[in-house]
Amino acid sequence: GIQVEQSPPDLILQEGANSTLRCNFSDSVNNLQWFHQNPWGQLINLFYIPSGTKQNGRLSATTVATERYSLLYISSSQTTDSGVYFCAVSRAYKYIFGTGTRLKVLA
Amino acid sequence: DAGITQSPRHKVTETGTPVTLRCHQTENHRYMYWYRQDPGHGLRLIHYSYGVKDTDKGEVSDGYSVSRSKTEDFLLTLESATSSQTSVYFCAIGSGSPGELFFGEGSRLTVL
Image 1 (tube, chains in turn brown, purple):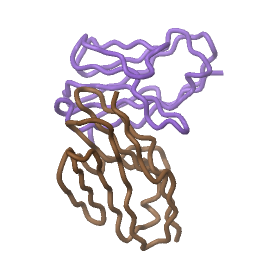
Image 2 (spheres, chains in turn brown, purple):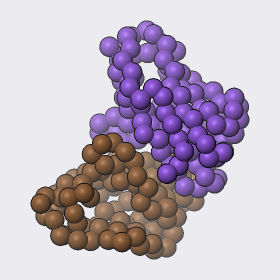
Image 3 (cartoon, one colour):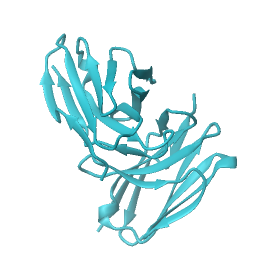
């Protein structure tokens, strides 16, 4: 099956810093999403981005499907950005998740 | 927010007892999923459904069964719960084929 690898596994930032999270996947996919799991455990949709680039406020994402990776950019980080960021991909019906990047933003 | 309700949200049970978790959606989406989340493993797919009475196994399906008799409900059953099934269980629905996934709030299950 498809393998999904996320890097880095852990990241600590000072408030205001920028960061880039990476998701590599081992095979072609039809769907790709980024999620944020907040400290209360809720999974929040960030981007549905099987290809191309999208932006939403301080966050943006780029997927290069032909090279099998996606990047999530966080600019001017805030303490509320803390949590775990997951990438998930699917080729047919099944979405497979990476193990996530745990982000902590310090005030 | 996507209309997804999981019940119960918290449950403590004993080894060997049956447990059923329910996922109810009001979005009329075709695809529904059950994942479990454990430290160090991210979210792992247990079972999924691509229509009424159409289900298939995910990567960690042993010890679990599912049923979908109506579009809106997807049930996850542990026939005889074990301590290794202590976890947080998430239901998700897919808007397309499967398109974008939306998650419920999660159900925390503790098996003593």
